[in-house]
Amino acid sequence: MNVFFECKNVGVIASHGSGEAIYNVFCRRFLSSLVWILSSFILTACDFHGPWEYYPEERDIYTGIYTYGYIVAGERPEVCFSKVYELDETTAENFAFYKNAKVTMKGRFGGEFGKGEEETIQLTASGSTPNCFYPSSYLMVSKCIPAAGYVTCGPNYTGIEGETYTLEATFEWDSAGHYVESTYKAKATIPNPVKVKGFNIPKQDGSFEWVEYNDGDVVEMDFLEYPMDMEFVRAALDYDHSVRGVLSIMNYGSKNGEATNTTVNKMFEGFTSEDEDGYRGIAMHDPLETQQNLGYAANYIIGGIKNLDTLHLTNMMLPVGQFSVDLYSTDESYIDYVNKVKQSVSDSRVVPESNIENGMGVFTGMARTTVFMKVNSEKWVSMKRIANRHCKNEDGDNSKGWDSKGCRLYLDVYCAGRGPSSDLESANENAYLYYSNSDLEYVENEDVCYPSRVKAAMMQANEEDWDVDKWSKYLPDTITAEKKSMAYADGLKRYCVASNFKNNDIANCTNLKTMCNDSLSKNECNSYLWLWCSDRNWNYKKYPQCGPAMVSRYVVDGLKSTIWEKEVKKWCEDPCNEEYAVCKDLGYKHEGTKVCVEPITYSTGGTRAVY
Image (cartoon, rainbow, N blue to C red):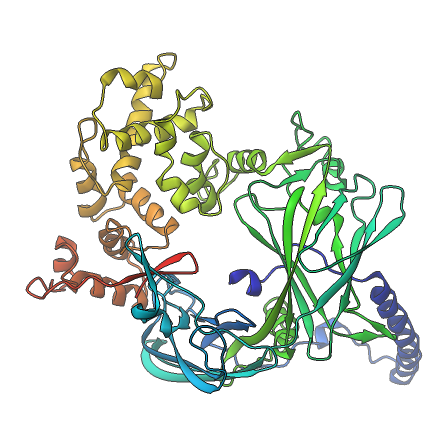
């Protein structure tokens, strides 16, 4: 969902024609304005004016709840909320910011449960993302399919083209230290989808080839190398008045890559080193992500030119291999969100306007059209290579490599000889399994990987008898005793945290569990545990070790947050959780006498959630 509402546009969607029209209009306005300014200057004589006289109008700063919601034709609605934090308040996006919530949506719905008649449905928060709400019919187990211990539920309420939907959300939440009740309302209309008539594909010699497009086709083209790589692929659109703009989202994966003979690589000659494929470490795509926002084009008519007639995709932004681009037609509210809400964050002169009554953000209707593309290139580099170099050079909290959330999750996967995955969390969890099917020859002998090997060995020792002779396969005899000792200590820490401090024949986690959970001062162990849990969104229902970690971080770091305080109290008093000494120090009583009722676990669109 975040890719719809992110505050930056990585790609470029622009129209040369419309840009020229804007320039001409600007010139005419500039000349007429110049005459007026000169006349005014003569009349005012010595009354000089300057930029110091101009300042934005004073306005109240919004301190409520932001709404980010959409309903797409043929897909389930989704609405997320986020509160505005105080300057000294710790953020807590992984926890519910509210005490009570009621979210409903009214309209005509399709799907398995939709009757095609106007009705009001309840939206319920997901356990893994408690500030995001989906149709509560996902809880209707009788309509869902049990599979592998989980319950899979389909898109039972979906949007319908041309229909209008009313969102209403009421929260009881802490606002600046006082519990208040806030209600937000908004309306959104789903427009009709756009149709792609065809593509004007640029060639290396400067010519263009027109290719008609039918739904489901794969448009194939060659990547334009330097100096033509900044040319545009032009998509001709057919649309009606209901379409107020088009948001372009590109979907790619680990099988894609990037061409290297580009303007960007040429610009960095002499600044960064080049590998055997010509890659200099400058990428147009995040190799650890699977989607990229290519920008938004509004349905404007400027100088007689319709902005949406032609959608421009920059050749430089297209990955090598097969991928798809989702074209989301939007209603009017999304234009205000892009031009006024987002713009006001970086420009104080812009007054934010939103379709959220009493609030801020956006609730928009969308319809999706997907186009499939394939780009060929003779000289390119894989996403795996990009990810490896990106993470080795990534500067994070401690100014060293592998120190960002994505890279930390990717490290064990990389050391096991595998490439990026669309689900890095699961890939990290299962990385140790790759070692049992290999003699480890394909894993590079890098210092950064030795702790990962130790962790993998200890994970395998939980599932099979351990032969001490296997150690030489994980920690080669060629490395020094000092490196072995450091790798073992670091690997033991990683294993103990990942396994919830489970002892086995080659790993004793007793001392580390005490350091991580019981210490009331910050140390290497609890700092690592907190970071590990943060990378997994503090999901203590899936990772029980993150419950005590949440409590200890709240106490040790002295976090100022009523949300953290509420979540800590909830965990400490839950009879399903273990008794924890720090909870007693906080005055919370463990409800050990009550019956522990485990929640039902669901899978909604591939994402496991606990309600």
